[in-house]
Image (tube, rainbow, N blue to C red; front, side, top):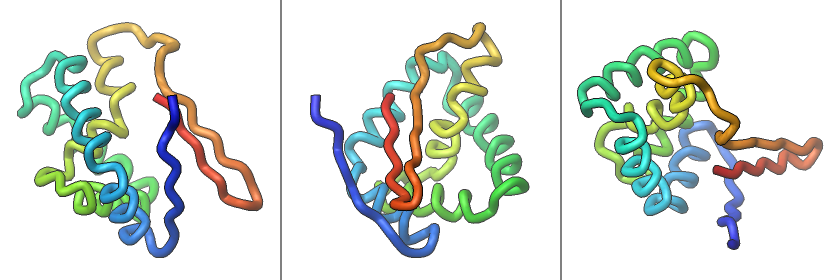
Length: 118
């Protein structure tokens, strides 16, 4: 399986937009997948995402700018879906014990190469 490789730069919202635009179909498919996995109503998922958005914003406002950019680039009408994806482990942990089947992210310096698998 070949993983997509994209190169992005710029301000957080610009990086997010480029990310979302380049991977829009994958993002949409991931949202569809997690809607089934969460086993919650849309309203419940988005309400939880609002909570995690405020937590993320308090910790790192620039990350929120990037998340908003991802949603805009992927043409996701409700950016809270991207917050839900970024908080999927926390949302899943509300109902079931954590498993070791989550993703891994790696960052290599000084080139700032970032890789993530699902």
